[in-house]
Amino acid sequence: MIEIARSLRRDSVSSRVQRYQDKAKECERMAEKAKGREAAFLVKDARQWRDLAMQAEHWELVRGSMTESLRELQRTRLLLNGLGD
Image 1 (spheres, rainbow, N blue to C red):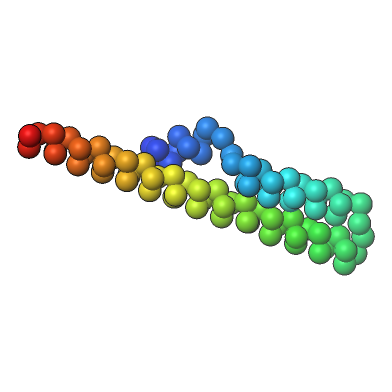
Image 2 (image 1 turned 60 degrees about the horizontal axis):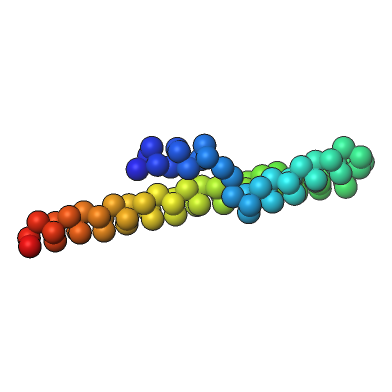
């Protein structure tokens, strides 16, 4: 199951995770041009977008590995049912 999660992580990033990462980059670019409190707010905002991206990626991996586990369970049940015939 861990190998499945690793392979999923290597393959691609979902559009949702990519969108969150893009928002973080946008905030960072704006923070470079801003000053004072506005810059600090944008840096904090970028950090929150990056945290959200990491959380979304984690839960997508969990969901993907759970789905694969369920498929494997179904295959096992089908094989066991076929042996009983």
